[in-house]
Image (cartoon, rainbow, N blue to C red):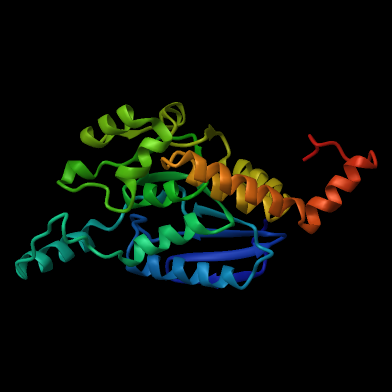
Length: 275
């Protein structure tokens, strides 16, 4: 996708362009590249715009500036919020769950969407930045001298937007616990070896773009159904998961795109391995 692709949104923290079934979102907030409330607001605006564009099947997140995807959530903002809560004498307990904040709702929308979200990590991606990447379906990292991970414990915090729950899905429970307790971050190649990203590549923009274009050409509703089923796998109710799979398999069988592609295969014009 080139810079000339039609613009969806031009904001203070991101720009979004769309073409050929693909939306590309570039994040920025110089000089540090941290996430803040304005970033959350503009990401929600992008998702709202996407809701009106069903032809956009794939969304690619990346950083605009060299060396940074999203460094982490703005710790200055977090300190202000913490001091305000402490001044009010607020105390917290598990029997009084804290409601979802806008960032939690944003990540939940990404995960629940039938679209495929790709994080093209081109620089520092820690804390809330990596939690945004974790909410994406695919993650690729640019080789280079920067860090990926969840180091919140090093400043007395814990990952608060899904990190403690989702990290074990990508690297296993034992390794995730060690990484969370130690506040470990990883170089890109280490992150790929540990499972935090799907691959470390020399040109993450070109790699993610190629994957995004291939996905954008895949038929719906199969793409969205596979995402839903893969995310629900391992939630403890295997019978219900298999029932959902049977149901959604039948839903794909009656879809226009599947019927056309099956007919092409049966006529000898397509092979099932064709992309």
